[in-house]
Length: 159
Image 1 (cartoon, rainbow, N blue to C red):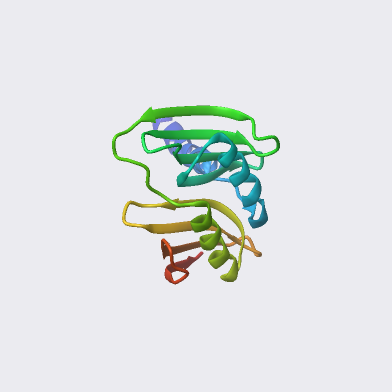
Image 2 (image 1 turned 60 degrees about the vertical axis):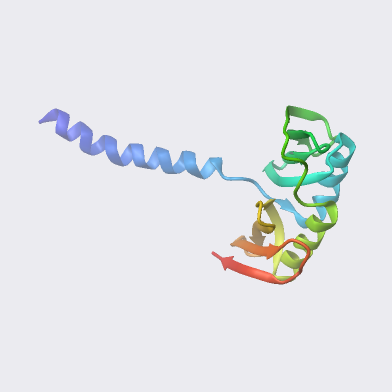
């Protein structure tokens, strides 16, 4: 009988702890105008093509992409000074692909026009679809998808 009672109390507590942990794992966001800092650090590091830019916390950003046609990198930077906090490189034969700085700026401009004031993540898939995730001025989530090289929105989700 005691075991059953403990289990009944344990399950809701576990669910609550899991929900709290999941909430803290979500990406942080950054004001849209800070993309210049992010791209400056990434450019200084040597990125030529971007597959994903993710804000990890107010002071950290992760950039994944290509340094050349052969070298792919996944690097975490300090936003304040551009210090490399973590890095992983691998040699790949697929060749460089992804977003240029101009593609990133264009996608963020479209997102800004739709009300996004902070971004969390921008990435591109192999078909050329760019997805921007962020928040509007009320803190609501906003996801925008558009094709690389255009400013036409393919899909928009407001939560």
